[in-house]
Length: 77
Image (cartoon, rainbow, N blue to C red):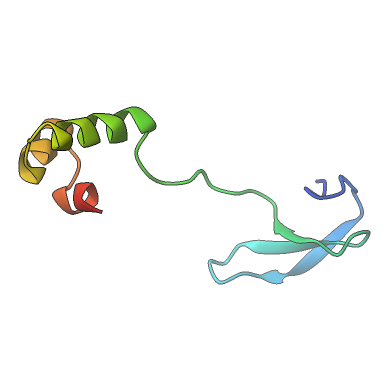
């Protein structure tokens, strides 16, 4: 395992975070990190753009929900 900041391999364990994942700290630069990060949740850019285009063209939120399979409150936000 390497530090994402300085690429040093001199790291040690540094407790747990709120989600129960192991924290690590780099001895060289004091950067704290976890060993793996999850991919961001959300919809891809194509789906977002198609939903926005449909809304601009006059389609309602619930109609877009039925067409795209995305909850209407997500579209509103």
